[in-house]
Length: 125
Image 1 (cartoon, one colour):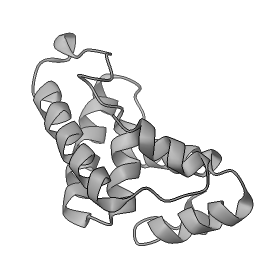
Image 2 (cartoon, rainbow, N blue to C red):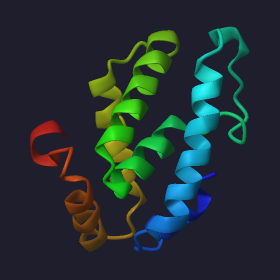
Image 3 (cartoon, rainbow, N blue to C red):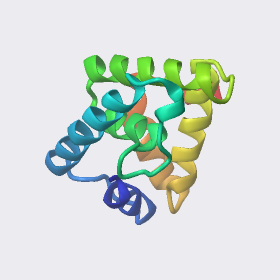
């Protein structure tokens, strides 16, 4: 669902907010429907179960604190069932992965600034 966002970042561009917001809301709706079911019913198909890391990246780029808290709740639910990571460990891993998408250090700085409203890379990574 977020291939355009990932492709834009890899090319050194920030995704356009309007389409990203629409995709984010659709993905969030799917994700909430999925995690409301017992974990045995959680699918791995990204069309039905959007990647949580991508949801996190999108909400950070959109600067939406309210929806960020919803995504953080999803992270907590999923991590409790799957990987045994704390939310903070997942967030650290996701932020590093976001920076790795950047084609160069200049765009990494743009991404750092863009998500600095929530995450301080100098302190956390």
